[in-house]
Length: 140
Length: 73
Image (cartoon, rainbow over all chains, first blue to last red; front, side, top):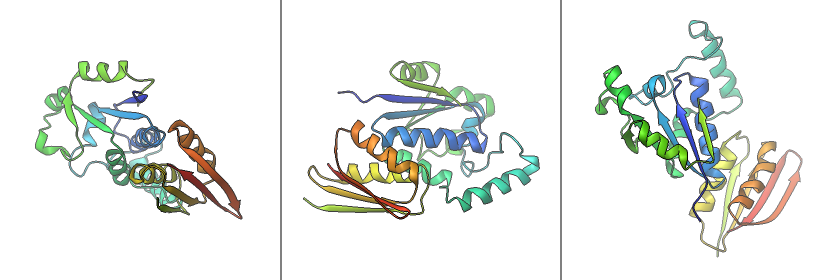
């Protein structure tokens, strides 16, 4: 039996939204689904080397004050780092697609990206192929 | 047949679920997996994952703030 699948377009690079995407995606893998994340626009910047934790808060960022307060609360609640969630996502067989058009527009080269995380480089056709096979599809 | 123990006490969403899935992947058919934790939503959700994966939920118990879930692969 083919496993059910989740696919997410990760368009935002905001820290809280990257958390949502990775928590949902690791949750899907944990519950026996396949999962595929398509990183595009601001989301793709989080796949740049050293970029994973660099996003702003989508609300109340307040020049970084809001983000550091949120970080403190996350630490207190023992929430995992994005790096750990990403490693778990990969270990459980999750797929990461990097948008090659975004790379062109933003002048991002393969060597600027976390090639250890990226499964493949693709465009809209790759995403549609993932989405049409998915029972859950989200745009974050 | 062996027994695998996973301690997720103090961990929050989604770690207990992820660690359970990793243990299941690494186990052999027939192995027993025992997960302990304190995150209450996971106590409800791990059995859902077990069902979705077609595995056997052997036992769920709660002692104080800590739960123990036993699964057989």
